[in-house]
Image (cartoon, rainbow, N blue to C red):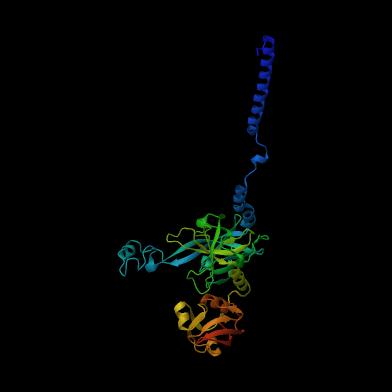
Length: 385
C-alpha cells in the first residue's frame, strides 16, 4: 500500500513524537539514582557508631580529678662512701684507683649531699590528707607538696613499707578538692583506666589504658595483689591515682616492669580496697597493726597435693611452726594444709597472709586444715605481728 506525501508526513510526525516520549522516559529513570543524597543517606553506619562508643573521651573525668592530684618533692641527705660522692669503695672492687686522687687533690670534698626525688599523690580529705607510696617519702627530711602553683610543707602521719603506702598532712589555706576510693574488686580485665601523675617532673600528666590483669604477684611481699595496666606509668608517677570511668580511685600507681627504667606498657597499682583499709589505719593509728599466726607456709603444686593426698591443688602448706606461737598453741603442725581461715577459703599463701594480717590480734578464728588426707577443725587466737 502506498502512502501519500501528506499521510507520510503525519505518520512520520507521530513516530518521532512517540520516540521522543520513550527517550524522555528512559532519561528520567536513569537520572533518578544520581539525585543529591538526602540527610539520611549521610548518617554514619552502625559499625562506625560502635567504634565511637568504644573510644570515649576522658576529658570530663580528667577535668574533675586533676585538681586533687599533687606533685611531691622530697629531699634526703645521703652520706658519701669514703668521703667523696663519685666512687664508693665497691665501685672498682676493694681498691679504688681514684681514692688517693680525690684525697690528695680534693681534701675538702663534702661527705654528704642532698638528693631530691619526685613523686605523686592525691587528696582524700579537704583538710589536707594526701595518699602516696611509702617509697616516695621514705627517709625524706623535707617533703614539699605542689598544688595549683602553691607549695606546702607536709608531714608523714603514717607509713607502711609492707604495702608501700603512706599518708601525709598539709595545712591548706582553703578546702581542697578530693578523690574518692572506688571498688577495685569490680575491675575486669579490659576495663578502661586513667593514670594521673608527675612523670619525670612533668606535672599533671594524663595517660590511659586498660586493666591488663588483676591479682598479680610480683615478688614484693606477702601482700602482693597488684592491678596490672598498660596505661603509661613512669618514674614520678608513683603514688598517683589510677581512675575508673566514674572518676573513682581504683588503684595507686606504684611500680613498673622495665629493664631500662622507662615504661614498656607493664605497670602495677595497689588495689583501692587494700589502700582504703591501710590508709584509714595510718590516719587513725599512725601504723598498721597486723595479725600473726606463727607459721611458715608455701603454695601447693600437683606433686605436693598428690603426696599429701589432697583432692585439689589449693591451700597453704605449713612447712614450719614457731614454737609457742599462736599456731603452735592451737595444735597446728608441720605438714598440715590450711584450707580455710575464718569464713574465707585459702587458695594460696597470699590469701592466708592477707586474711591473717587483716585480723585484729586477740581474735579467735576457726581454721580448717587437712592432715593426712582428713579434714579437721581447730581454733586459733591470732597474735600481733
